[in-house]
Length: 231
Image (tube, rainbow, N blue to C red; front, side, top):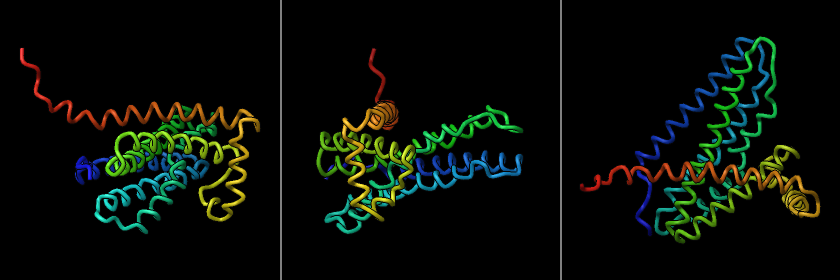
């Protein structure tokens, strides 16, 4: 097995940072609700909860993947949960469609609140994808892990389209798998219309660039620890 596993300390540092980001996001929303005496954007809290589901699944999947032999049922269950809920993390970015000037609340405050939730969702997505990618790399190699990451980002982008425009939920696959799969195949057909593929390709490009930036940051530690070149 590959020996490049993330230390527990580094993993918990990322988790605590994401808890802090979630607390800030909810705090901004709570202050807005107190000020306006309303719960206009309360759905952000639910969307943030859904964004945490794949992150928690990946955090539980990762240590199981290190074991020999790994508990197959646990890996299959956690893998399915992660796959179904993974699009919910980056989905929060599309909630910006609700942004509009409101009475009694400065627009800049809502922009910061929206961005706080969006960045938290993105970082939750990239943490969970990174953990799953590292698990794949440990068992199947570097090429396979990048194929996996690209495929998940592409499928997630299509899943976000289904959620934003068609109002599908992750659990629709479990409640009515045949109908959901059939409809998804129809929408993926390039002759059915350009919007699903155009949105998916655009969001995939956006999420891939963001993930590559985050991924590069995870490898800065080893680079900064190198001794300076001798003059």
